[in-house]
Amino acid sequence: MVKVPAQFHIGPVLIAPATVLAPMAGVTDTVFRRLIRQQGGCGLLMTEFTSSHGVVATQKARKPTRTFRYLAFEPEEHPITAQLFGADPKVMAEAARVCQDLGFDAVDINFGCPVNKVVKCNGGSGCLRDLPLVRRILTEVRKAITIPLTMKFRAGWNDKELVYLEMGRLAEECGLQAIALHPRTREQGYAGRADWSRIAALKAATKTIPVIGNGDILTPEDACRMVAETGCDAVMIGRAAASNPWIFRQIQEYVTTGSYFRPTERDRYDMMRKYYDMMSDQAAPDTVGKMKQFATYFTHGVRNGSKLRTIIYQSQTVSEILEKVDAFFQGELVAA
Ligand SMILES: Cc1cc2nc3c(=O)[nH]c(=O)nc-3n(C[C@H](O)[C@H](O)[C@H](O)COP(=O)(O)O)c2cc1C
Image 1: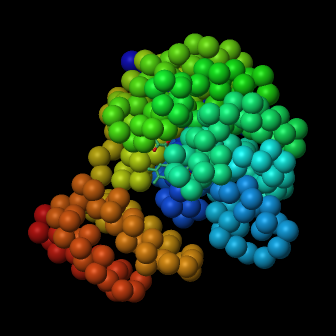
Image 2: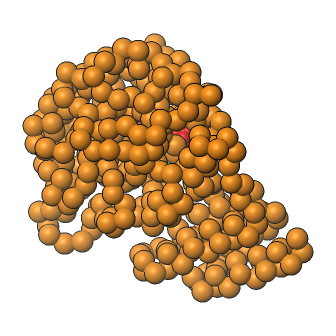
C-alpha cells in the first residue's frame, strides 16, 4: 500500500506526519484548530484566510479587530501557517511581515478563493487571470520575510484557462517553499470531482519544492489513494475534517496498522461537548452562532442527528445549548 508520508519539510520546518488541515474561513479558528491538534495526526495547521489590508490596518490602529482575532493562536498550534489574501504586493509584503513577527512558522498566499467579494478586488482566484501580478506578489512577499512562504491555488479560472503548471513554475522561480493545489477551477466552485490528475501533473513538473494535494479526501483510504495516484508529498484536508475531526488520527492509524478508530456515539458526544466547552471558555463574540454552525458539522453520523440539530438551532444561549446537548445524548446513550 502506498502510504501518506510520515513527514515532509516546508523549508526548514519539519511537518510530521505529512498532513495539513486546509484553511477554511469561518471554520478553522483557534478553537477548531486546537481540537484537531489534540486528536493527533495532523502535521500542519493553517489559519482562515485573512485580508492583507485588514492586517496592515490593524497593525497601524494598534487595537484588537476581527482580523487580529483571525491571527490569534496558542503555542500548542505550532507548526502553523498564516494565510493571507490580497492583490497589492506592498500590502501583502507588509502583512506577511506582521505574521512573521506574530510567530507563525510560515506564510501562505491564497490564490484560490472563489468568493466574489475577494475576487472583485483581484484577490484569491482573481489573480489566476493575472500571472504577472502573481509574480510581483510572490517576489515582494518573499523578500519581506525569512520564514517559509507557500501558496495555495485552484487549477485556473475555468477549464479553458488552466494555469496551475505556470503557477507551480512561478512558485519555484520566486523561491517559495511549498505549494498546495485544489484542482477545481474557479468557475467549478465545488461542483463535480476534484481532478487529481492535475495534482499528478503538477508534482511531475515541480522539481524543487513539495506539492501538497487537496480536494475530496473523505477517508484514510482516499488520502493514501491520492498519494498513490499523484505522488504528492503531503495531503491537505478541509471539509471532511469539519464533520470528522478524527480524520488525521485515522490516517495515522491506517498507515501504521492498516485499520483505524471508528467513533462511537459516546465519542461524538465527547467531541461536541469538548468543542462547545472550548468555545464558551473563549468568550468570543457570537459564540451561540458558532455553536449552531458547528452543530451542522458535528451531528453528521450521530443517531437522530437532525433532531439534535433542530434542538440546537432553536436554543438562544450557550447554557441552553449545553444543557440540551447533554440531555439529548443522555437519552441516546441510554437508548443504545
Ligand atoms: C467553508 C469553507 C471555507 C474555506 N475557506 C478557505 C480559505 O479561507 N482559504 C483557502 O485557501 N481555502 C478555503 N477553502 C477551500 C478549502 O481549503 C479546500 O481547498 C477545499 O474545501 C477542498 O478541499 P476538501 O475537499 O478537503 O474540502 C474553504 C472551503 C470551505 C468549505
